[in-house]
Length: 237
Image (tube, rainbow, N blue to C red; front, side):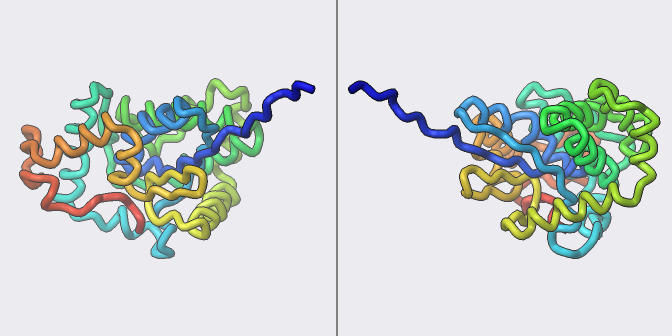
């Protein structure tokens, strides 16, 4: 008797991110596509990186002015090498909890695909258009294609439960071993931080490594000449 060949279930990967981390933006624009091209099903999980260590938002908010300028200049360099659009928002660092909560609200109401669409739109608004992440209009524009009434979204923004959702999701990520963003859990193999996640995409890793030796772009007065002078600035609080 000829029995059908048993097929194995596709592997799974989870991408953890925080809209407040520009390095997570770079990874979000490259790594999920690479993982899916390898036949992995992909789940997106928005988390508050500042809560991962239990230190609140002090990690991102406490960046010195020179470091803030360096981070933006470094990400701009890497994006340019990859031919990616990049425009920094008018404020950085910023509290991304409302944006993260919006994604979780959409996921609960409309599913993972709808949340992925909103996340994609938020990356575009904040780090490609340079929109103000504090502006409610930015969130509404990002959610306009998921068929949720605007009044419902506005009510959700004012609901304290929105941030509570983010806290619960972040706590679950911390229990799984996530220490910083971006992070990828590929079949229980955890990659934490931009440098580790970037290695999943050779082109992204190459662009990041080239940035280490490149001079700071014009106008980046506070940026050091070499990225190697600075630690891996992934926001873990």
